[in-house]
Image 1 (cartoon, one colour):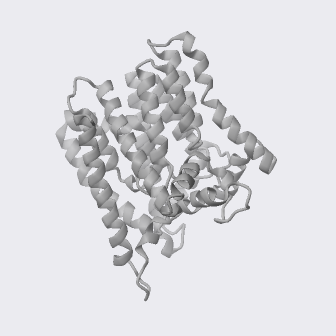
Image 2 (image 1 turned 120 degrees about the vertical axis):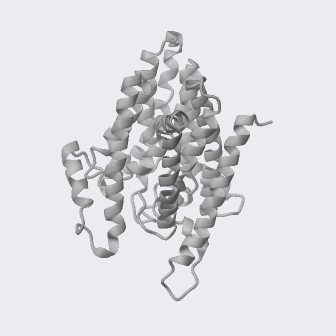
Image 3 (image 1 turned 90 degrees about the vertical axis):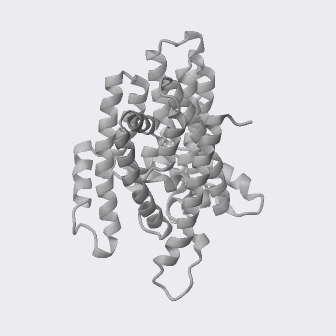
Amino acid sequence: MPTPVAREVLGWWLVTRVALFVLSVSAPLMFNRGSDYPNVWKAWLQWDVWHLKAVAEFGYNHGEPSGAPLAAFFPGFPVLVRLVSYTGIGYVAAGIVVSAVASAVAGVYLARLAQYEFPELKGIGPNAAMVWYGAPVGVFLAAGYTEALFCAFAFPAWLAARQGRWARAAVFVALASTVRVSGLFLIFALLVEFVTSKKRDWLSLPWLALPVVPVLGFMAYLKQIHGSWFAWQDAQEKGWAREFTWPWISLMHTFEAASKGHFPADRSDWTWMFRAELVTLFIGLVLLAWLFWRRSWGEAAWVAATIGAFCTSFWIYSLTRATLLMWPLWIGLAVLARRRPWIGRLYLAVAIPLAAIWAAGFFTGRWSG
């Protein structure tokens, strides 16, 4: 039977899933400018969902059926989508199911992690999960994206690491490494946590090599298909301009993209998304400073590596979405809301309308990070 904490978390999960479903139906109808009645089910088939669906359907050796190099996407999520699609519900619905289950699991473990880190704050676990589910970019925890599945592995991995259960942590980090390139940053963070932890056990050190295995396996597979160990990075550069750029140049490009008039008038959503990226970067740096102040070295390594990766591309984008992976952010917000209730009310006043706007933007095909 689920614990009281798990039941409360799953209650928040259910409420937010219902809200997103309502938005997925209503947004395409409300913002429909065509003469035909829109197919609201297609509202879920946007942006990266096309590419992840193509990987699940065709694999990596059938060109670019979705119009982008598919080697950029790690196989963990598409494999599960393909397995679920055998039930006959289709690839898009399968992706929604995978994300639904994964976000439920991740929310429960986020609550457990928050309660472990702050045992003096009773009920902080469900609050952290509620803050996470209600994030402005929370739509990506429901759509067929990789964030929910990655978190379903990363959150229990970090809880295990904080408890000194290194073998268990390594197994979960290995699973996370099959889902996103962010797994490389999680491997780095786990090593830092091990070295700085008072609960380190040197006999468990060999386990920390396990997460590298799926990464090397995927790279070897791409080498066989595309002739390059780093075909995934080549694909990122080709499809998403993620070639290495000095951070100050990347920041300059991002400021330019966030300026009025940089994009055509009918792409004002691009301008606003780049502005959101700059706000997110500021929040991330504040979070990083807080983690250094707390001497949370492993978590600081995770956040720093994540931010650093986004700040060394041509310009900074999708960092907004990556905040969903930063569990210290959501736990920290929950702690602030508990200690300063007005901050919690302010967060909800800002996050709820932003979450609705972000979801409506996603469901109507606008760029939403």
